[in-house]
Length: 251
Image 1 (tube, rainbow, N blue to C red):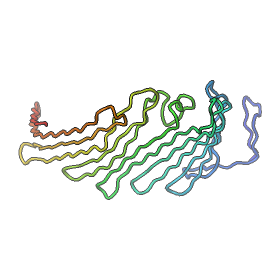
Image 2: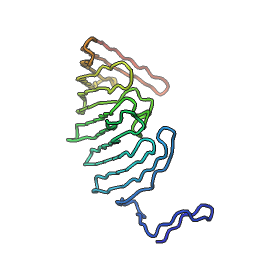
Image 3: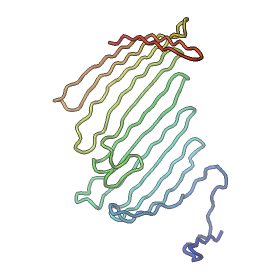
């Protein structure tokens, strides 16, 4: 109650009432404001609002005013279920006052998810989209640096057993600026088999990978790659010395 903020004993801010948690318990309400300035965006002011939706999910909504560009809405949504967690981030600017042709909205969106299920499966997703090539340079984002040449897009599903595991993966890139178009793998399949041997602590291993490379430019070639590697490892060690032997055949 009756809070006064002072700088060198000079009162500069007064608030009749506010409350905040005194423990680790999360609480819905406004967070500390964001105040800054830059040549690119002018004076900046943001008021984050934290929403404690449930025990396993929350959101932070931030209206963010930039004197040179306009008002941007930034949202962050997080969730946690069993052994999986994810996050959705969206930055949206209806009109950019610094652009001559400012009819198009500018935005950045990113979805991230990782976790395990059914004990043996693991999933990983990281997908991003952006309105234009100059967004990171003009406005910036906590998701990526201004020097990024591309945005990472990947989806991966893996299965783990006692002596082997396999993975199916799709991978693409959102190329920014005048950089050359990038190849994407649709899909990439991996299989790794590991079998301990009954003598000399040896192990037998088979690693195989198949990838199909595709690209949006029809003038560039597509390709298929198959890699198979079979190996036998026999380590031998004593208190004062050791020998590692490894034999492999690759195709």
